[in-house]
Image (cartoon, rainbow, N blue to C red; front, side, top):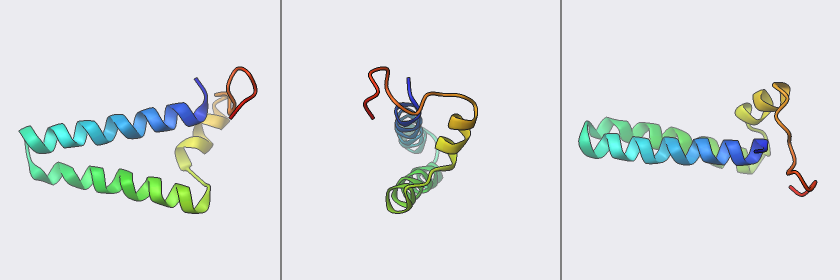
Length: 69
């Protein structure tokens, strides 16, 4: 897996988990969905993501196996 796929997978998992927790536990978990969505919007506008930077420094490949982003 490359950095982009990991970031998207983690963001999707966090959104689904927060929606499930909001449904079965407390509506306050929707704030996590808001936070993830705001970070995705910020990343799209600025082309910078903290998680991507950390994963790249840890040595996770930034491109796919075929060299295609």
